[in-house]
Length: 323
Image (cartoon, rainbow, N blue to C red; front, side):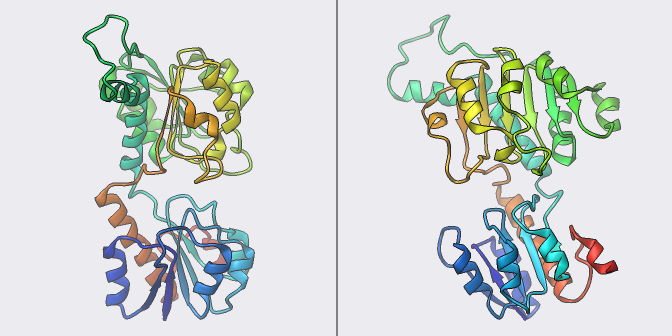
């Protein structure tokens, strides 16, 4: 069987597929492919390993009657038309768990960096502006004993929250379900959206993107935050109204923001690029050698299971096996 991989991934996953006897075609360009290029690459292939930057829509799925498996090299799968895949009885899988702690660590890295103005201070020093200790230089925000608000307490949100334990923070969280782990370990309190936004010093977003979470944070919510609030997003860019956030940062409604994701990646709101109270990263929350390699292995294993007629371990549309 033949597999199309839309971008170069760590060798461990590719080797696993080759060792199983699959023929592999990998996109040789160091960029995301166009729809036309994906359709061309998918021709006569039995499976595709896609990235979160690939929009696998109905047209692409229907372009190949031989397609038997879609393995997404990511936790999120909002880039794939799951309904179209399911209608065609094509399993779709993702790579959960493996990047939980890695992404949570990035959220903390952003929180620290914004709070203590690390990037701004580094730039200031490199430019030769540092002339000695100054009691009013680069004043930032303390982290210990502050209130941490977490929006979404799935695997990553829970991991992020648990890492706050050493800082003796008060933890508020917003989720559909009660999080017994956080309430037991941190005495965290489940609150509504309004209370979390108004009372949190730091807000970290860990939601999947869907119709109900699109622009979950907009002008209204940003205006209700206090001026020292720091907003962190390592989930999906469209959960925050990017233009509203740029306005809030520019007019200093909040202290700052740390972003790893954007509404129209790789395009970023031009105002954000000019502001020094926001730290921006190139969607690299899972970018460690170990995590990215393990993601490749999981994506490959999912592919092998799917092409062998089994239910992939991380299948996100298992209902197709009951149809």
